[in-house]
Length: 144
Image 1 (spheres, rainbow, N blue to C red):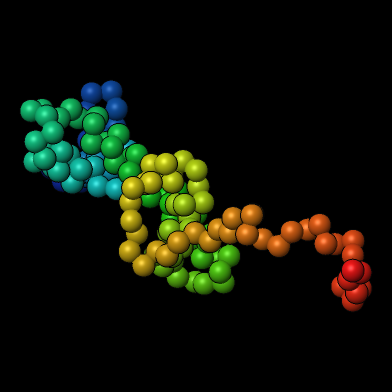
Image 2: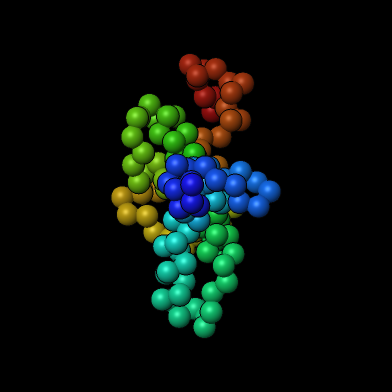
């Protein structure tokens, strides 16, 4: 049998290791890096964006990993906010609450306006009723 026939069968010896049909399949750079975000698309956007004359092979992998981490972090916190409000669906309000209640994400996205996000509830302690009236009875008359 020739090498071509052996390769069609999916198994032939190449050097010291055995190569099967599965090893010949192409694998995306995202799959190789174990990412969900598209490394190839990030690489294309980096090249077309005129950020630099050349783009290294590791740069889009690293950037895709960072973007995936940030997305996962925000979605986890937004999911917790949705669950706290007894909702099944994440809406912009939950994203807003998640980002503004997290110190680091709030610093990173401080200048970002989320449409339909609303505001984070906050009442200044000076506006709350004072706690000094706890010891007095409510029905007591005032003496003049």
